[in-house]
Image 1 (cartoon, rainbow over the protein chains, first blue to last red):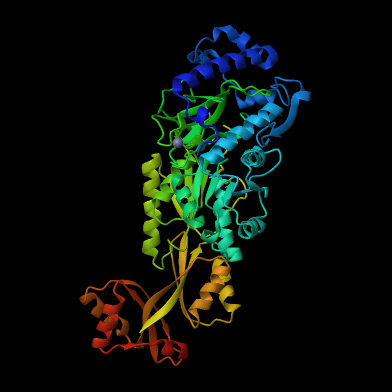
Image 2: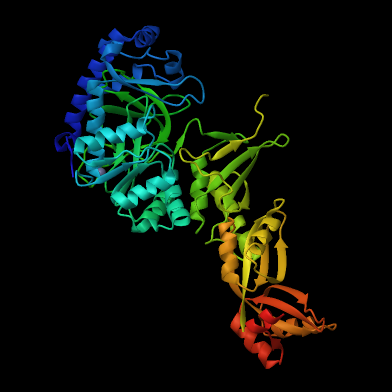
Length: 435
Length: 143
Ligand SMILES: [Zn+2]
């Protein structure tokens, strides 16, 4: 199903023309109205009229999250504050938060792209949509809300947390669609079964959109099995618009990016060089139509690749792979780049282990040591030491094969790794990196 | 002639064994036999209790991972060589012993040996053939 068939299936050549026209407009607008951008352009001697083709975008300087913090709070806005009707903000755990301002038109755009996402996975006005992303400054809750509102679904704005209530609402209202983080989805399933005695697969859920943190195919299978639903990847970020930048279709083979509004590039995270389709690197996004806050070549720090070829669903807008890591999550261990997802992948490949784990990095003397704590589940527990030792060794071997790094696997009791109601804390870095 | 044994995964952390035993004691479940096998990082607590299902529930409620499995229990005369004889029969029949633990009965006349092998049915048949006394669940409860 299509929300906007014309745009979603537009031939790539026409789409590219539309993108170029919009790119020229947004560059001009940013240059004229945002001193932050004008200064950056002047520093490299670039004028808006120098952008003549889509490829010319490579001359535009990147925008980083750190730079956005420097112009906190409103230094990136391209309209007077009176035109801004809503403000969101990303958490400021690592410094000043980033502020996003939306005009009426931007909210309309947000609803439009989210409506496309939901319709793409066959959510209609007949559905009961439970939004368990946080409502508030975080974009997750309201982003889904605007999309669901647009398609006319019945919205249950549950927001994050209050797990028991979430499950009771699903049961009593007959919720058919769930939106939350993937780790929270697993927690909900576990909680329903263990704490309330509700078998999650008997709930009426048929689909769910999960995002705002990294997850794997195996986690998808686990969530799908436990709830008996189809689990989809959703992608978005505060700096661009929030959820709705990209979403999987029913093929579950990559996330369609709404390229008429968001121009995507993949660059080498170290050199900034633009990489070809199919190559993994850092996703860079330019908003083509945002009014309140145009974003030129924003470094998302998310690692993915553009998927080559057309999707069987008929959409011509290109797809990106599921997010494979964050450039900031890159842990440098013994000089090697390591992503937590690689370890997660390895654990989940070793049969029957519940996806609950934690990575602890220490430096007892001069060498980094990695301990991966994996919870022993009912399925993997054995009354024989030999079997558990084998499991441990298999995990160590598989992780070494995937990452190239030798780690120590420790089996731990269930629930000894803290469950989160938001983003899962996977890595604990205890190294003193002062020297 | 199979006996139900409950096993519990324990991290080698202070107090975990105590927590596990407390969970069982609070439900007034009696432990007939107990053994701990451990490595430097984790351990497995194995127990014969008078109500395995209830023990399982109590332990899982307390957050432990558990498993109920079948073992055989035999009465061995409390004299030198008693257990060795049993093991010899198994060895000759090419049956692997996964683990074994023993305790002495109250009367002190016989030792009770709990055995887990890779072929439990074959083990039972073999021991019967050699006239070794297999304990029934009733025997265990009467201990
Ligand atoms: Zn598709």
